[in-house]
Image 1 (cartoon, helix red, strand yellow):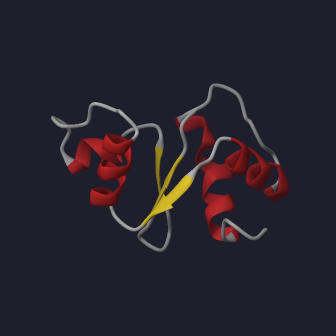
Image 2 (cartoon, rainbow, N blue to C red):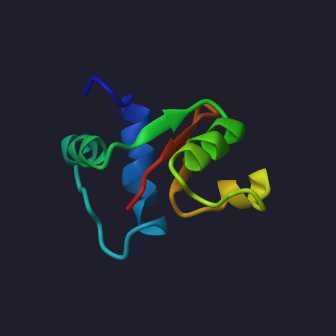
Length: 87
């Protein structure tokens, strides 16, 4: 588990239903492999999350940071950062 901290993987495992109808991972290793495969990213703030979406062509201009935080692709992490997973 090099790229994603264990606490990030646990957060994703617990909350993956916010983005997926069925579990995509059941173990920390499966979660890490899945996040690496879909090129998930960790950003330091919601402002960085918004910039990430804009850089990748998403229309988030009219979204507030609160709305962005509620997006199914955005997972709030225990250390105040955000995991972005595009399903």
